[in-house]
Length: 116
Image 1 (spheres, rainbow, N blue to C red):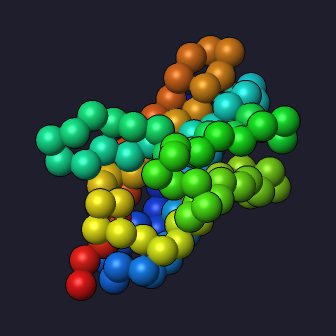
Image 2 (cartoon, rainbow, N blue to C red):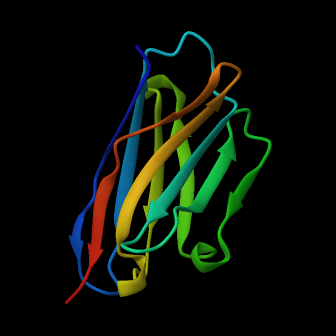
């Protein structure tokens, strides 16, 4: 069974940092794009960052450029999102997404709250 499990969310002060993790399991085929999305209350889900698993490209939302880095550890089947200089408007549930030849898979999300 395919699973994506996010972790690393929590409460952080403005200006702080967090590293989110997305552990993938059950894949019998390699996802070709891994992404992080977020959804704030009352807003639509939006892309934060994505990467091609062959390492050919990375993309970031304009609001996160220069403040976030997406990376992966193939040995651990884990994708990370490191976020710095966090702002209250970064508060949201953050979701991991895998795009594969068999379809799209989502994790259950991890809450990030930026507040003093």
